[in-house]
Length: 268
Image 1: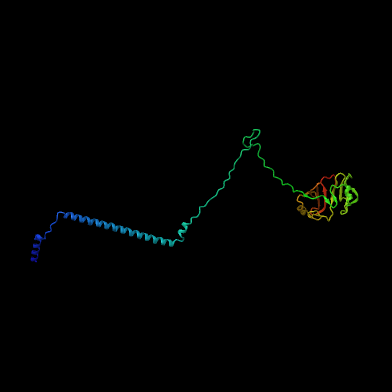
Image 2: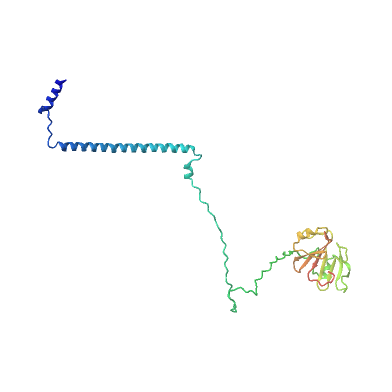
């Protein structure tokens, strides 16, 4: 043991084993330390970047995984809802504006542009519809014509003589005809000629109306017919003017006359 201590002392006291530093040894050591410090700093920065990138990738994968899971749990697809936007509802309002126009100036200079409280505006009376146009039909039955003179009527052979008085004044004459035995079948005025002709019970007008026709049928056939007592009178468009006279019992036609409009016999 003592020999070992002596040997160690000898070696440590040997000048050949001394380490002699160069003048720039301190700078070399400082430079080396600085290089090691920069290397460690670079490695630390690189490690931090790697950690950050790894964290970002992990977060992205986590989000993708979370979105996929959430998408599976949603009842409807969000892409279709976002791609199809419902059109905005549009409300339409209609406004009515009332414009008051001043009346035209009064020629007398009295127009003030203000309503006259003493002269309220009167409503126009309802417009009455024009009566139906009379139908065109000549006033003739067989060979007898309304307005024909007594002489001309006797020549036709349709009248049955002798005549009888048609009115209290004994001005107008009445005759029976070959088809109507009634002595008042034809009435003749000395001034107007034949003023009335009675149709036979089997005869019909051009509209198909005869004895026994219903009142409604007369109204349908002659829309211009008007009620006159128990009769319905339908004026015809002809020269001279005349009318059909449909005597009724309130329900059906009993007798049909052809009557001159301008007659002067009291009983016609």
